[in-house]
Image (tube, rainbow, N blue to C red; front, side, top):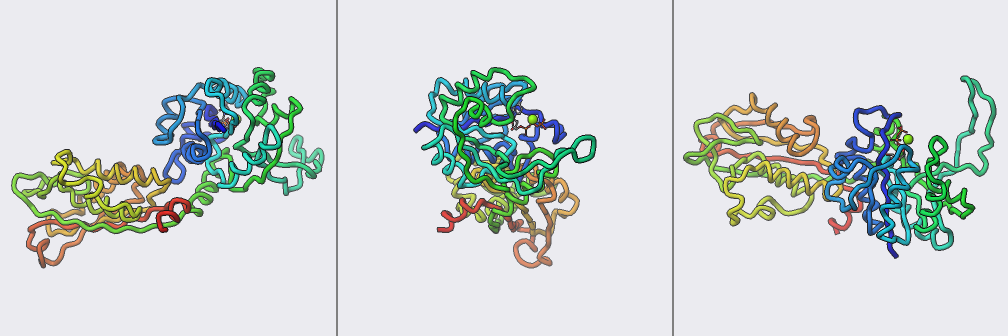
Length: 388
Ligand code: CTP
Ligand code: MG
């Protein structure tokens, strides 16, 4: 059974009113569209995005997908464009999903596929609970009976051939375009089944939806804490790099890479939170590649591992332990640099320092030590197998 997923992302987000279309905003550390793309990629063999190609490719990151195709003036036209692009792949089933709905509950796709065994279309929907009013000019014109009324969500699942035929028959409907795909099957007289929708499957429409989605997404994640510790000795003819910043100082730290002890401790904290070993496992000192390497790339790798697990860095805190240089004046630049490398807000990163009252190797200024702690939020499904 070939299952394709169509991810429509050609809208402009006019009701949301941000500077960029809402599907490219950041939600829980990742672009909105990537959340849905991951869930679809897990349930389908092909992922066809519709919309602006460069923006989509950047936002989807590591999620495998077909080349995006341009959308149309309406959602209906955008879906049609995506369906036509899928024709050469001849899928049996297509899941059509709004990029603006980042939270596809785990049971939804299996329920839709099961429903397709007896109907050509199936959608997740929720019964309307509130009393409905038709309003004209600020006053109520009528009460609309809510019996039998449901709110339609996506992904909507269809056998590919009848959906394509329904879209081709509908053509470009302009102002009368359908706002979902079930409507086209209904118009063609074909049965569309209902499976249980979810209140968490929120369509990002207005700014306040971003907060509701963040609560729903982060509330379903598990916090994981990791610690890191590193020491480098001062050595001859070296520049000093700390937390991604070059610091003017008479001596620099010796090491295989640029010896940025702060970044190394932070990387280990992140790998620790993920239970993915340590910096030496990912970048063995035995490999010549990493000689004098800019440690920034190690931190970008660690951040990439969080993203690959569908996680989010909640916060990181680095403590540098040395008599000199004095860290305070450099701390704001260090925070900004680390946050930039990690792709998080500066408020998520702390850099501070302490001396050891002239005691021990740091007190004698033989080297610098660093310790770090990081909190990573991981989706429950990614945590349970890892925790065994
Ligand atoms: N969409 C699309 N092509 C369009 C219009 C909408 O691909 N011409 C997509 C949107 O990107 C979104 C989904 O269809 O993922 C649902 O549409 P909606 O929530 O209405 O998004 P926008 O049209 O972008 O928002 P607005 O109506 O507020 O402008
Ligand atoms: Mg719209």
